[in-house]
Length: 528
Image 1 (cartoon, rainbow, N blue to C red):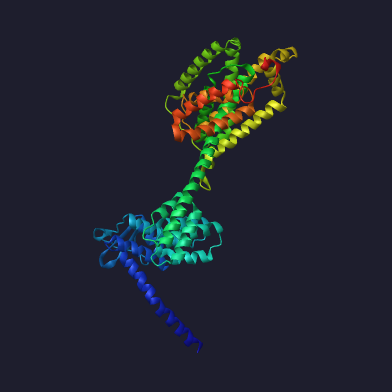
Image 2 (tube, rainbow, N blue to C red; image 1 turned 30 degrees about the horizontal axis):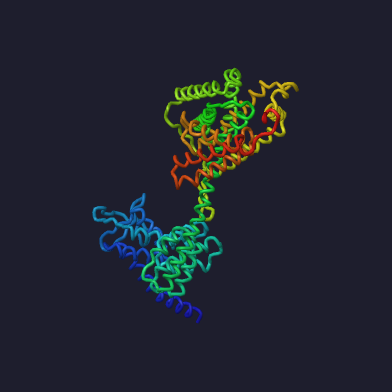
C-alpha cells in the first residue's frame, strides 16, 4: 500500500509539472522569435520559470552569445564550443552558417536586466539581492511582482527589504491589475525614497486613477523640496572639501607670513614639489615594489615634508634673510624664484601632466542620504584636519613652537632673551614649506600634477591668511572653510570666475573694516 501511494504521488506531481514544463519550453521557443516584444516576454517567462538553465540562457542573450538554429534549436556560444540552451549539454558538429544571432533592442535589454534581477533576488549574498532589486526597480516590469513577493517574504536584511519594497512599488504602478489602494501605497513608498529616480518615475505616470495622480503630484512636490535641501547639504560638503584644500595650501603660509612677515610668492611651488615627490615615490614603487602601491601616499607624505622643508630652508638662508623689512623686494624675488622652480621642474620632468595614481582605498564614493561623497575628497578633509592638529600641537607643546610664538609676538624681546631669531626664521620657513609639500601630496589626488600646480592656489592661500588673521591658525581654519563654502554657493549662480571675483570684493570690503582679519594675533610688537 505504501509503494502504491508513492507511485500515485509521483504520478500526480508529474502531471502537475507538465504545464510548467510546457511554459518553460514555450519561453525557450520564444527566444528564437523575430519579434522583439515576443523575445522580451520570453525572457520574463523564462526568468520566472525557475529552470536551472534560465540564468545561463539570459546571460548569454545579454552577452550576444545566444543563437537560434534549425528546427527551434537554441545554442549558447561558450569558449569550449556550443551548448544546448535547454539542457546545458555540449553540441557537436554545429553548422555556424545556419545559426542566427538572437538580437536585442532597448526593450529586450530592460527585460533581460529585470529577468536577471528576479533570478538574483534569491541569491545568498545580500549585496547581490540589493543589486537585483535595484535592477527590478529600473525595469518596472509587473511580471516580476510574484517573484518579488516571494523574495520579500523571506528577506531578513532590512536594507535589502527596503529596496525590494521600492522595486515592488515601481512595478505596481506599471501594473494594470493593481488596485487603487495598492498604487496609493506604492506612491507613498516612492515618496519616502525621495530621490530623482523616484521623482522621474512618478512624473512619468499616465492613465492612473484621480486619487493616484493627485498623490503622485503631492509626492513630486515633496521630493523636489527634499532635493533642494540635499542640494544645499551637497554644496556645504563641496565647500568643506574646497576649504580643506585651501586650509592645506594656506596653513604653512599662515605661520611663515605670521612670524616673518614675508610675502612668499614661491609658496605654491612648495606645494608643487610635494606633488612631484608623490609622483616619484609612486614611480619607484611601480618599478620595484608594486604590492606597496596602496601605501604610496603614506610614504610620500613624510618625504614631501622633508623635500619641501629642505628647499624652504635653503630659500630662506640663501635669499629671504637678506630682504627682511623690504616687502616689495621680497615679493619680486620670490615671484622670480617661483618661475625658476617651475622651469627647473619642467626641465627635469617635462611640461606634460604627470600621472599620480589613486590607491584602491581612496577610490569610489559613498552615499549619505541624497549626498554623494567621494572617498578621495573625504580623505583630504580628514588629512587637512590632522595636519592642522599636528601643527597646533607643535606650536603649543614643543620648544620650537614656544620660540616661534615668542618671535611672532615680540621679535626684539625674544632676541634679548637669547632666542636665535635667524634660525627660528629658517626653521619656521622650513616648517611652512614642509606643510605645503604635504598639501601637494593631497592635491595630487584631485588635481593635475604639472609645473603650474601651485599657481592655482597661491592667491587663494593669501586670501585665506589675510581673512583669518595673519599667523593665526584658528583664523586660517575658519576662513578656509568660509571661503570654500561661499565659493561653492556662488558658483551655480554667478559661475566659477565671477564667483571668485565676488568673493574677492567681499574680502576687500571686510578688510576695510577689520584690517588684521577675523582673529588677529596678540602681542606688543604685533599690535604696534
